Image (cartoon, rainbow, N blue to C red):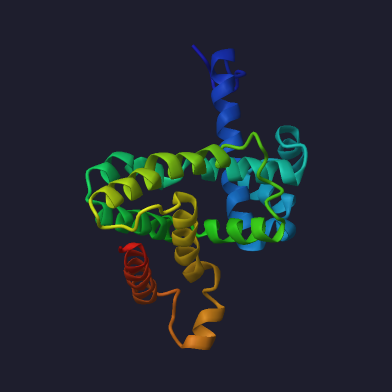
Length: 217
């Protein structure tokens, strides 16, 4: 029998450690999403995670190391990879529409994505290491999702021949992300509230039409 005041058995220690790290990463993700890596404060992350600042630094030697760990978590959770079979079961044009929709849903469900994208543009990707899961994840998106869709579309005569999957994907990604990365500036200039569901849906519809027209033979 284990009483509440007894130390945890060894078999439960890894679970406790994992739970602590998860809380730290969750708190770090929220703080970085709000303030960016430069403005994020480890003291606030520790407080929100219910741990000491010293414990944060025990698991992550620097704030940059913590940021890299958060980016790793984000890259593993990219929803676009969960739809691989669905893309194969859709006609090429519908599959491209699904790619766009999945990217939009990702930005909507995870507001921190926009901060991470802006941060890495500002810091020239310095937190994305060669060992990062982000790079192989994006390569999988290109090789297992985008390239096969374009190949099928070319074979069926609904897409231009010789399209580069890398160029097509980053065109789609940047068109999608533009609504979220510039959500404060665009309304001031255009008068459209791109933080609203109607504004986002309008942008998604236009991006989908624009991309599909661009891919048409």
